[in-house]
Image: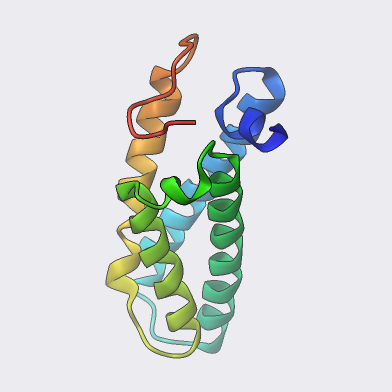
Amino acid sequence: MQLRRLFYGHRPAAVAFQSGLLAIDLAAITYFVATSFVADATWLRVVDLLLGVLLALEFLGRMLAHRHPMAYIDNGAAMVDLVVIASLFVSALGVNLGFLRVLRTVRLLRFTTCWVNSKGASQPCAGTRR
């Protein structure tokens, strides 16, 4: 119940939490774009692994915050997240699937649109059933 309030609530703490998630998404997008022009290096693999863990924790939290956690996986944005997370873990092993990570922008656009449109709204955005 507490996770649901953080991910879907409108109280100041929830908005701060959601703003933090948005900041993480923006940082991830910036990282994906910036590193697409950088030659493969060990530090990239480490950052990919750490970012993969962070995004996996976000995904798990979002899934557990959903009223029907297994139904959350049917969401198209959740599938994109899983592909991005998997690509980060595979990339950490040395296989470059960077082009798949750009799919995170789809998630960012949906999240940003929902977050902006939900200001003062009592209903969540379409596709984000609680």
